[in-house]
Length: 261
Image (tube, rainbow, N blue to C red; front, top):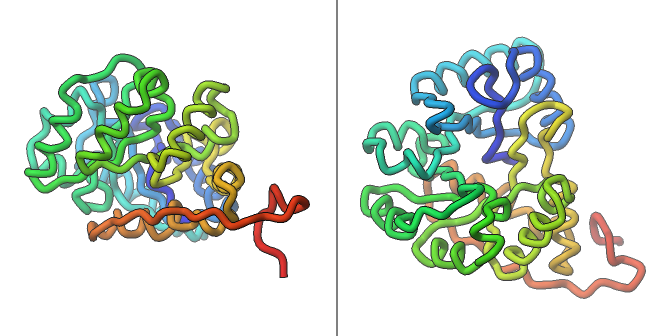
């Protein structure tokens, strides 16, 4: 699986503080079935990380990971605050995009709503960038008015939900909102938003299983959200999310992991 949102790099934001902690987190990611992580530290007023700092962090941690014998590939990225995304020039944005793909992971604000955000997405597209909205289910504005997200997606954005939101790690309202967005085809990618090996650990499989059960499909029918879709984003190509057609389940198979037989 490919994890497009996590805070693996040590010492840059509210993720691990030491390399040892980051390595434990990397081991946990591999154990959870993740093979590629786009390192996405915050780029915000509180965490004014620059592209050079992030790239240096990725290179150094990748070296440590290889030396530790951990089979995990890292690529650079960032989780950019809506307060800063339109203040950055094209070169900075390109170097903060996921694997230099032109796709920007933009954090949905937890409170308040930037009225300029829909227009901003269009302006970014003109500049050659596409937007992946991070964890919209955790945004109070979207919880109260999901059509805000529909508007952004109608302007070309995609949405990334945290797998842990489906598990219930962020409270009932976040879980309810995640499921509502999923049913309305407003979730395209699942990611971990991991911060440590134990507290908010890496892993998306359980969230994928619950999301599949919610839609009435087998978990592997949502593989696009954790494999092909993220790969297309990292490669900077055309991304066309599929529609997930429910497959009838027998009564005894309402919570399967994979089809039988």
